[in-house]
Image (cartoon, rainbow, N blue to C red; front, side, top):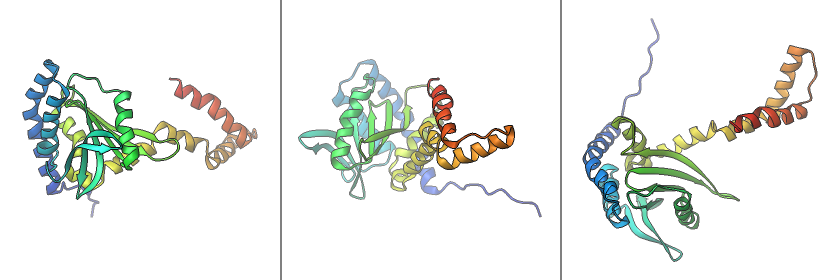
Length: 234
């Protein structure tokens, strides 16, 4: 009897969330483009972002959103809650603003002070999601970025923004996505390549192939100074 390939059955909650998101993105495309065209102010942009958060992403306006969330004398545009637990800060910029490091630093401060792991930057069209990793120094990883008015199919945009739906966030799917991406990031791969176990085995393999003994520590320096440096410079 031949083997059968297991296929993933999409749970009903996910199908419902994706369809809701797709329908909403179609509906918001025109008003979003109009906001950008008239260089709408930040307040008008927030009105649309609120609709996206509630109608597209499934958050309850009253139970899940805290506007003007106070953080040590400053105010984050939104604190995002799931089951009364603060899970993310959302910082909104005017529709025609290009998101940048200055905006990221602003929401990073809020997250550090409140112990929140997820940072969301948006101008209504562009949505950037970052994972804050506590430590000294604090580090921040970009987990996903999608432009609702940019190139790409509607389905592709839904696939990306789906991780911000209340249903997906509640199940920790964006955390799993971040872990998968972080495990194969260049920095992670570099650490593996210069680890003692890998260098020791590489030195043995070089000796088998060439008959020349290479010290693992010397090999590590060569890898750092040639292979990794050349790759990072590309």
